Each structure stands twice: as C-alpha cells, then as structure tokens.
Image (cartoon, rainbow, N blue to C red; front, side, top):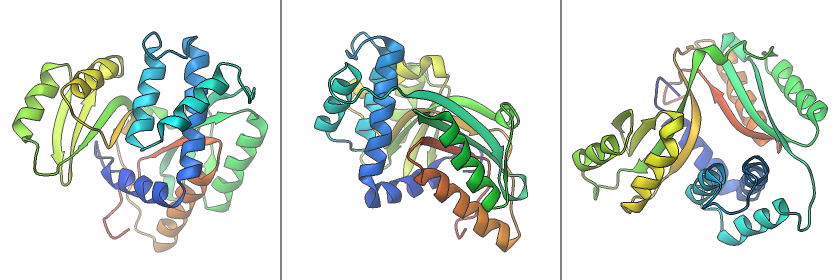
Length: 246
C-alpha cells in the first residue's frame, strides 16, 4: 500500500474474500445496518450513505438477497443488535502506522482483541489521533483494466464528473475523489456503465514506512491478517511500503 496505490491491499482482500466470503459479507451487513441507522432510512434513494455502502457490497459481489436481509434487520425485522462505528489507531512492528475501522456491539471486547494482536505481533495500540495525521481520507474507485476500456476516455470522464486524480496502475484504473464528491462521482460513472472492483471512502497514507527486518515483515503480515480476520474489524489501513515479494 504505497503512496496512493491500494491495489496490493485490494488483491490481498480479494484473496481473502474467495476463502472467507461469509465473513466478508457479515462485516458488510453490519455496515449496511449502521448506514440505515445513521441515515435514518433503509431506502438508498433517500440515504446517500446507504447507497454508497450498497455500492461497496456490489463491488465485493455480495448477493442481493444478503443485502436485503441486512436492510430488513436494520429496519427492525429479526436481529436487533445495536452496532456502532469506532476507529482505533496504533503502531505495528517498526513503527508502521495502522488504523482499524470497526463496527461493534461491544467496545471492550473489540479493544481487548485489538490490543492482544498488536501486542502479540510487536506493535502497540495507541491513542486516538496518534497516526491518523499520516493519512488523508479519499474516495477510491477502482476499475479493472481489461483492455476494453480506453484510459484516455475514462480519465476524461472521471475528471469531468469531479474526480481529483486518475492513474493507471497495472491491471486497474484508480480514481481518487474528495470524500464529499465520492457519491456523485461514483454514481456518474455507474450511470456510464462502469463496474467497480472497489468503491469506498478510504484512508490513504501520505508517508510510508519500509521494513527490512525479516522478523518485522513476518509479524506485520501476521498482524494485518489477524486484524482483518476479526469480525468487529471492517477495514484495516496501514502505511507499510511493501515490496511485491513481501
């Protein structure tokens, strides 16, 4: 996850999704419930946050029946668990900055689980704000570069509808937006027929940390894996500058 590029992280998440789709969909279901709660409606036409989360679900290939089931729960049908969003920050091995966005019904449990893994793998859970200043919040839209899409056309279309930045990154095109413009840009590109590998607001590092110690590299990888495997953790962001072989 070097600079603006998240594709290494996305590829990792796609691999996890193949092996653990049920866990991924459970986390997205919580995000849907939070979006309904915050936006005050289970109708994406009147709840922009919900519309964005649904787009994220579709990018992750979450079945529509799963989406509808989560919306029913959020509307009071079935599970009445009360989830809240909370963000934790800390340092991994070698001072790598880590941000964990969580959706939980038990703050003490979540904080305890995170502290356990940070300690276990050579890091430490810090105070709010200890690393977030090293990241910028940006809307990120990733589209597969399958050879059928004109790079110039997509760049022009993205910039015309309000994107901040565009670049081709190997197998994908990556579009960055201001968080306030993300929904409008995503919807405009969606109407033009583009499909997304990722569409969400993310934390992009402004500075990165390189690890050279093999033990630290191993522990950092294990820390990310352990955090992503927690049901309460929705997203893990870090500023580890990984080589391809790592």
